[in-house]
Length: 458
Image (cartoon, rainbow, N blue to C red):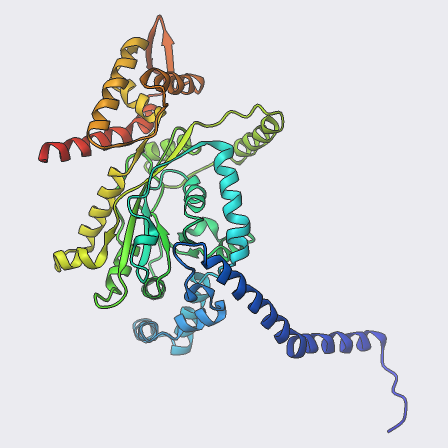
């Protein structure tokens, strides 16, 4: 028993490493996790004192617990049994597939990354590119039902929408976004999941996947999670506010309990003087496909140029970016008013409110005036002035130059001429790129049509 045993050095090192890992996992690890958990809970408690909508316990639970809760949910287990019966695979295989979907969907909110990094970066990026113009919120979140689940619904104009809205709502709540497959690339996926977003497969044909996703959305709404979604389901290719896709909305309606927690939709209208992806979107609309083929070389060159200009203090802003909030819609009141209301009716009502909340910025307004045909500068100013008066009388949200139609027209026209969208020859302004001009004119023309129809009905 007291003899000496000779072992190779590599084996001794391996034993030492395994012992250290075991000690870390069984002895030191639990204490460290408890300490960090306590610090996180105290930080969230302080954060909740200044937020209008407090961070829900559902989002603060450990991700492993949420994955297990979702995977073992009775409705998910029922879907697993149906999937196994329909496909003929063993139940264990079907459950493993559902568990994999649950792990893919469920996020893990890091309050430090969200409020300490993401919101500050969102504010910096928004102000780096644009002059941000914010419209008033018709009903402050703090005045809504504290127990209700709030869902921000907005038009999808640009990928900057995520950045802009995250900053705008940072002082009110932490948003949970639904993001597509583009964000599932590591390490971007880890960062986005840590910011509370959840991934969805927009074109998945698996009934089991859709049942797992639906159950997660319903659980989040039932627990009061503040969410943000784009009902259109993708970026607008023609500039107009499109029709709602029923996926996420149908999940919320199917899981809604009129006697339980209410769901309040807050419409948000977003507009830009310049959409960074405008030429890509126009090309996709022309090709009739939603496969965007961005040129990475051109994108990298633009970023390098931007950084160089910013360092020299010569980076030109891309114009105005604006957001306006419309009157909220209570799902309980909507269904009580007409119990036979369909999900399609809800989607149409929400998109109508988003359209009416759409802010008007200089470039789309002037583009709408130029779309009527060639015109001189003086006549263009007169057209813009008439449009401003018409929109203001109809109650539109105007985010224009404070000095009136002359300055609004001048700023927008300079931007359109600099980009070659409009040309000026012999004192006449005409479209050099009619498709891109129509892309920017479309939302104002659509808004004017909607407000005009409402005025005529009144």
